[in-house]
Image 1 (cartoon, rainbow, N blue to C red):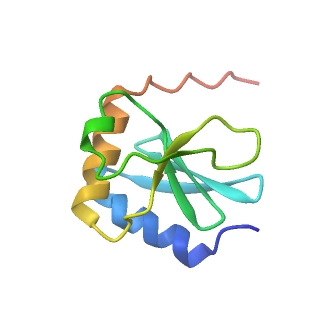
Image 2 (image 1 turned 90 degrees about the vertical axis):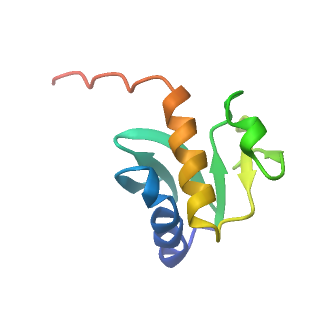
Image 3 (image 1 turned 120 degrees about the vertical axis):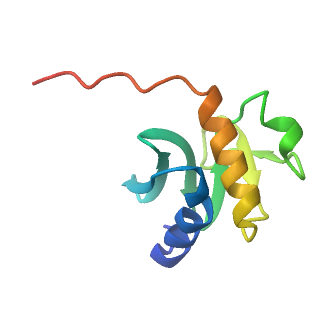
Length: 106
């Protein structure tokens, strides 16, 4: 089951305090980016954040789940209604993720 476009937009809006948020369709669901860096997934109307050691203590509840069958576990974020909380999680996650690799020219 794919994610609802309204839910995807809601998550993007909730995370917007962290920077320029863009959701891109990927394999029927969505990757979500902040300032060009992918930080999470939206799958089946659920929000998943890439796990980082530094963000773990900031979580209200640590719930690790794979976003889809065969995936590595991500932080499952159930509390998506707090704009400041989500923005802080995204901002801190992105601080600790590597920079994206430059795209090769064709």
